[in-house]
Image (cartoon, rainbow, N blue to C red; front, side, top):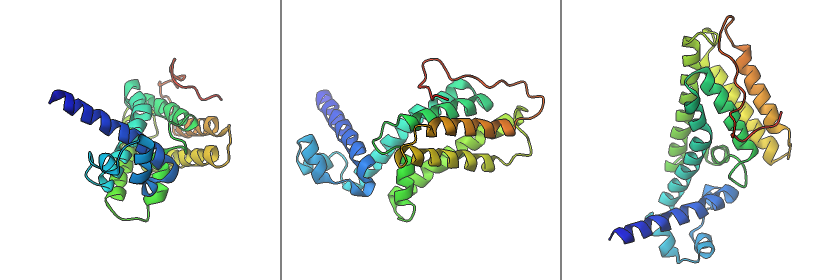
Amino acid sequence: MRKSAEEARRTRERIVEAAVRQASGLGLSGLTIGTLAETLDMSKAGVVGPFGSRAELQLAVLDRAVQMFTAAVVAPGRAAGAGLPCLHAVIDAWCAYLADSPFPNGCFVTAASCELDGRPGELRTRLYDTVTRWRSFLTEQITTAQTAGDLDPDLDPEDLVSLLTGLAMACNQEIQLLGDERAAPRARRLMRAALASHRRLGSAAQEPAPAVGARAVRT
């Protein structure tokens, strides 16, 4: 029984990994059971079986992509400490993630947002919740930095969240569509400049250098 459960888990993981690669190129709506079955040398029933339906497979794919983003971008921020240190670490990790994306067509969440923003349904709802949590995380770190006296208390955190998000989305387009090798370092520079412009006078916090061993974004 234990061996069967482990085999089922590995099969499910294998399907999700292949589906993430397919959806990154074709979109979540372009995810097809037939193509996955051919890629994995499995039957269609074997591909959809662990999920129950194509819709549940799509949700699993979106969840996996979000897990990958969280590990690459959010985790380094949390490890750096709350507030301004977190924001600096997130900016470095975010730009490195965009420069060296694990997905063929760049940031999965950005692509999914463009694909699903006008398509009501469970996928859009899941993505909405994901983006809302991400923005809340950034807002929380900005508010923490304000409380610590590192950022201007009159700054509206939502303004800075929108600015950072906009720069990241522009960076993704510049990398994926325009092939601009300067996009990631430019985004990092502009994001850090946005933080610096709202630094509170007299703040003792220092801007850290990128962590040793982290993927570097050349400036």
